[in-house]
Image 1 (spheres, rainbow, N blue to C red):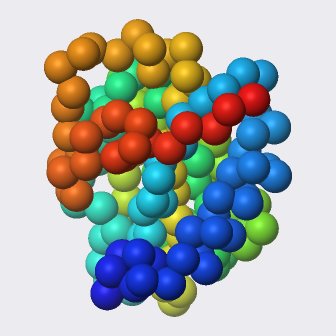
Image 2 (image 1 turned 120 degrees about the vertical axis):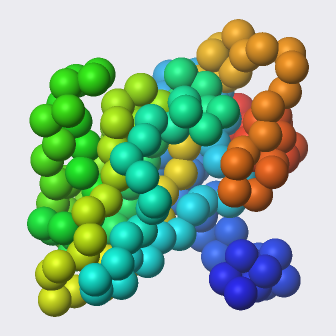
Length: 164
């Protein structure tokens, strides 16, 4: 219902694009691509937000992508993302954060995931990926698709372009 509604009412996407312009563009010296529609996550009590621990590159994402994690509620303990500190280290730790904070990480190459939410709080967050335009140009010309929504990893579908 959420994903259907943001196509009908553009107010959320207008705010998201403004967020990209005012906040995310600060992290890039040159033009970049960003996920056209962010991913929303709700982690209910006694449940998971995503299925398995994974690297995004396991699911057709480029190794050059950068993940941005933005909580809408307090994230702590087992209601947040758990992330390893180095590639294949397996030393998973929770990313504890409050509303108004943002965490940037290498989700394409670092294994991350969720545990069963045994806290007293539901976690709501959104995340999205960005890619330097110079790295986008390095991508294989055989366009792959996202697993969940079958979006092609190209500008105008999965990616939007931000020109600096």
